[in-house]
Length: 173
Image 1 (spheres, one colour):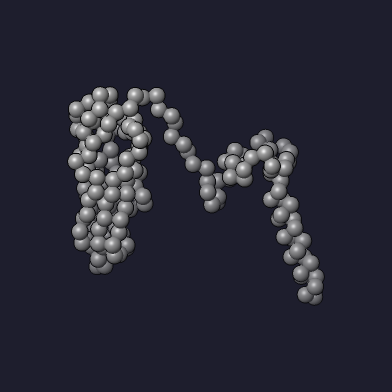
Image 2 (cartoon, rainbow, N blue to C red):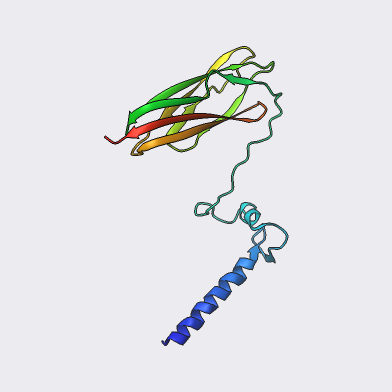
């Protein structure tokens, strides 16, 4: 095969990819339609027939809209510096909060900014005037140097999310 045939073949493949990229399968998977009516990001999220395990940006599950009345969550401290710690250690910090509002406080979620930062939070409602705890466990693994991580708490507060921060200087062992 000569170089000219290889060039033509590659151009044909590129053209085919562009044509296929212009058209998408409808939600029933039965026919193709041109993708002018909705943004490309929604095409993937709205098509249940596409596998999502290899997607660069898989669809994100949105928090259901809460009907709960809002309240106020007040923390004694919202940041913590572990100082200098070693790799492969387990470091715990308990953040204490008070429901200073007039409605029960319901925490629906708490997530760390990475897998090394794991929060535990109360699943039951916290009555007005009562306190609760968010335990954050930071395991740096093989990370080293100055590290900053966050925990995002979602609750029936305004705004819906509250962010706690931890930091540490991680030394190699």
